[in-house]
Image (cartoon, rainbow, N blue to C red; front, side, top):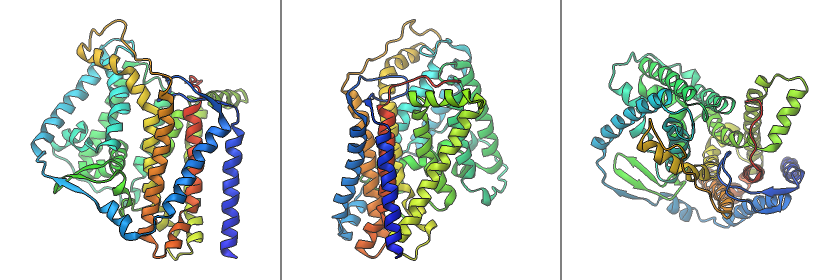
Length: 460
């Protein structure tokens, strides 16, 4: 009876996903990369486009289910090559350069050109760092510990080493990440260099004060959302620098390791990474513009719309994940707690976030790279008309491919984790049913966002 009830609930959840996909029926204009640049379009029926993407993820789960040899799965994830790489001296140099770069960004933000396409501070932060550098963290490896300018400064100064409240855990970083994305969406940070420099200066003051009070290890390990995002994204990448040197592993292999996510607060942060990337794209769709205008027209203050949607969406994503964990416990028929299952499978969400980030920002990075290069050559007097690359029509297909590849890697990571957790082969496969349904639903949501035409967010 217990398994029958769980199966009926799973079928209902799957049906909801199907209805949600059909509800978006129309014509999809798939475009590449970012909110403000398009790479051409390809006209396909939206319902077919979304169901095909969801079907690919579902089919990948079925194929992975045939791989039941634990020794083979473990051999794939344990494969590694280590090379000696003495980088301690280089880290000191990179930290010093990163501090100079931070000072330069703030200076150019306050004193450089007001045109965002000519201001090096705007281009470095959004094009070079948030679009380009972040992609290298999950595609290559996490170099942020060697580049973090705020950590470099705190390492050169004495700290108070006050006790960090353990009960807070990673929750401050969850709130910080949501706050940063809210600020990005509601304020013209990408259009106003002076405002951007002010925000960076304020963030620097808070970060340095916190790190000096609690110590850099505690602050950047628990509170700072940027450092935590990079730390998690770095586990998706194939390269990692450790005590033995530079280590090469299959992409995503580190995500199947136990205790990568230790508690509910870290589960929430992983889900927050997934949600904020989605929200950043959602607010650039015409559907969101129509919804926001309708809500404001009904009497809701515009200032309330965006934070409410941000928090509500995060709550929905978090609820969906914990619901999947509860159903997973039922379908696997295990004595493991729901919390233990949620913690073990949370890292499998990170390739999804990485794939969507690449789909969302690669076109943005490539299109504006010439403007970034020209601004860096002469930050205070860049060219009047910066060059922008117009991407070809076929580039829109790459955004779809990146989303699907991220989901396929997520399915494999979840599959490998299940075989590490559950002793029975059929039990391991059954445990993944709820998570696959959630992944299929999220795949269709992601594809719908990257396929929607760009629109300027209203009331911001």
